[in-house]
Image 1 (cartoon, rainbow, N blue to C red):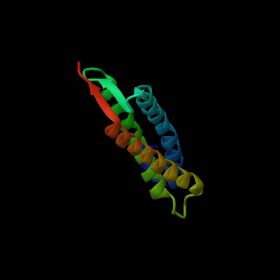
Image 2 (cartoon, one colour; image 1 turned 135 degrees about the horizontal axis):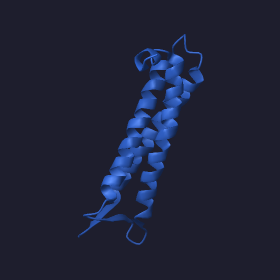
Image 3 (cartoon, rainbow, N blue to C red; image 1 turned 135 degrees about the vertical axis):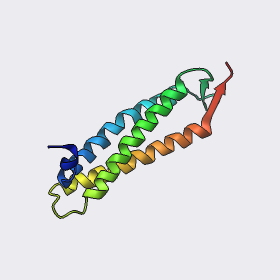
Length: 121
């Protein structure tokens, strides 16, 4: 059975929505850890070096988490109200959990943008 044919089923979309939302938590936690570990409480800033690998690692983790959570959100959205979906609870869980992770990632990005302080090389 091909992926296209498999994804036509709403119960499969519901299962994937929950799994994608659960997997999206991992890069979000990694990005949060990176931001918190570089936070200087005396300065009230997230301090990082200009030529380091911090920003690409942080941005990559946030981007991966956003993509996975957005996919979970839209899979949950498209399969939630369908009559042939016998797993509508999973659809709603994927929808809300994916939306929560997208929101948390956006808050993390805004917080990083407002608190960043780049040290000169």
